[in-house]
Image (tube, rainbow over all chains, first blue to last red):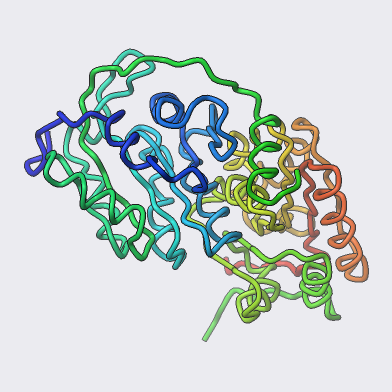
Length: 199
Length: 179
């Protein structure tokens, strides 16, 4: 366990619900598994501005960066688990140098690979993703593990001059699966239609 | 000072490539560099209307481009043939979601390669593109560089598929190693 953050108690579904509440116009990119279900729980399965990766582990942050570079006036929110971020750890460096003021990454760090048998991830040992992002030079980056820190973290994710990386230490209890499409073409077309007015 | 030098083909093929990217509306460029692509990268970096970013790994390219396309913008990845091995899983997004994926690849081991470590991916990089259902185009003459890149951008962004342009060392130049 990390010396600094030993609590894994925050409720990821509650945080994502708060984060996306009233933000129907905000594009959201998520990584695999629980992060995608969190977005579905908060916004419904057919929200056009959700794009959920169901493969390409580690890639959601870069999809978010590409979108943020393409749409610099819009806040882009990326949701990923710790295993997902670890698989593309270098992207924390790429985000940091990007200068994408409108890009935010919320990491839901439960310390385990929750979809594959609860194997421990590196964050449960000594790797602190909030510190990694901060040491990359990310303008706003930290780990949050207490309830009383959540509202400020959400404010930074929604309004901070980015890139913003907030690593939430969340409960390892599996929040449950929800029905949703895995059709990448469908998600892409409805996302572009909603964002650009054409597919 | 003794140094390992590269002898590029004569002509402005790098500028032709940059001009083709501009004319085709490519405005985001991600790269993991190779010496042969140096001038193209420099031209892109110097262009204030292009967003050009160094990547930590080539696997960031296909996903970056997918995000660009979600936002209505055309992107491009510049990489070396060794880096093709790093993109395979990420590039599956192009297959699955029909995202455009445009790659300009410095094709090492295509001509007088001096580094054995370049050979495996140099020999296999185009096979991967073909296996994925992507188009692999070769540039063996400097005069073909600009038109090939223009055609590749058109194809990638009209067919929503992967297209790689592989630049031979006959065009880029051969790095001569000290021994």
